[in-house]
Length: 104
Image (cartoon, rainbow, N blue to C red; front, side):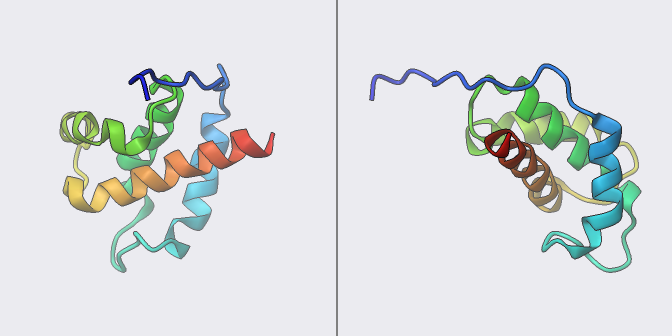
């Protein structure tokens, strides 16, 4: 490989509210969920996963993981999740966006 990044067409618009509604309804059914936590605890990580998919310029989640850890620490607000836990939720949101793009 030449080290070039394949540019993937990502949508310029996403129904962000719709995505958050999906996660609000389904977050408890994913492996990252920890009993006793609420949607609001996961929301910063889920938003980050959606945003990084849109702004990642075709790079994979793993390629951006280190940068995302720094971004999460700046944007997590009062979430009790450290990056190790939040990364799984962010990646799940990223993967959902990727699957929706492939299915489109």
